[in-house]
Length: 135
Image (cartoon, rainbow, N blue to C red):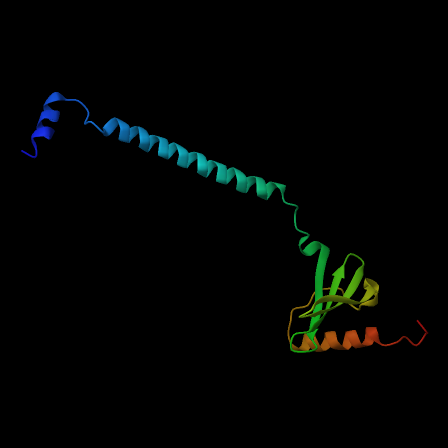
């Protein structure tokens, strides 16, 4: 008894009553999914193309840094032909001093470590001491 509608439907050779509507709605749903994914990819591509390129390491070089407190550091940052001495702490970043790049012995970036911190501290102390020629 339960199988009698299926047997009758199989004898007729026609589609089941809900199959065309199901196929149509499934096709519409897949088409909508493809459109949404295409819009997402187009948006991501546009964002990547329209954003300004980052300055990268070519414009700025970290020459060194030394901790002067639990949350404070003094940082030497080379930008173009100047060296900025920055104070970095919990309250933000402040420019402490601006030097010409020629005032440094070497302008190559150094990796962090104990002896590089000591060299940086010595160089910073030497640069910030008052000059003997009155400048």
